Length: 127
Image (cartoon, rainbow, N blue to C red; front, side, top):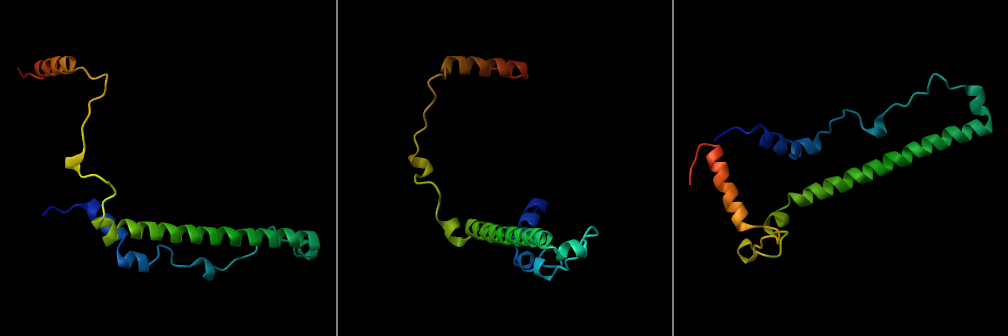
């Protein structure tokens, strides 16, 4: 059996090991936040500056919460795609044998057949 790197990558991407081991070694909750160099304690003690800093921190927290929720939804969606139920239940309502093939109105069978012959001649074949 041939070794397919793409299959190996996809299987690894959705493996239990990949799910349990995050790509980052530090979770956002465990990160150490440092004050930026421009931080001025005197200005911080002023109410207006303190409100701006706290609002910025709150906004960052809201963004992190939204990002976590989106990642949860992505995980649920991907798990659903690869679930046993999804594999056993097709998304189509008709079987291939029941489909009726129709040619578009603009299709011209004579023109199609003529072009097949021309192409065969171009590539060294014949009719």
